[in-house]
Image 1 (cartoon, rainbow, N blue to C red):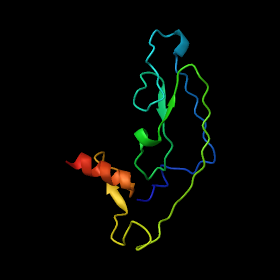
Image 2 (image 1 turned 90 degrees about the vertical axis):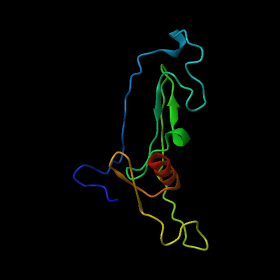
Image 3 (image 1 turned 135 degrees about the vertical axis):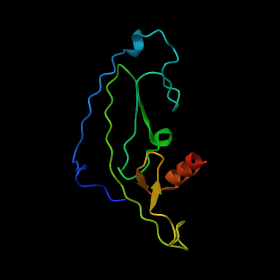
Length: 120
């Protein structure tokens, strides 16, 4: 899927300021934050991904605790698999995966699994 140039722009840098109006040390909730994914009851979960791919929030998400300063730096890396017999893909591999929300995502193993589960 090509990204529509009318609704997207290449960004060199991006800043997001989010004030989570809750101080962790002032809340009477001892299990409101744990380091494990999906156990956070307050704060935010952030994931950075390509616009063409389905976000893997449970695998790649970063928990941000309320009342803390969190700085996230990342570097984009593109991996290209070799064709058979060296890579796992063959020439018939799909290039796009349709989604239940009407969008299409670039093929990924995770996206394919999620599409199959949602289709059932």
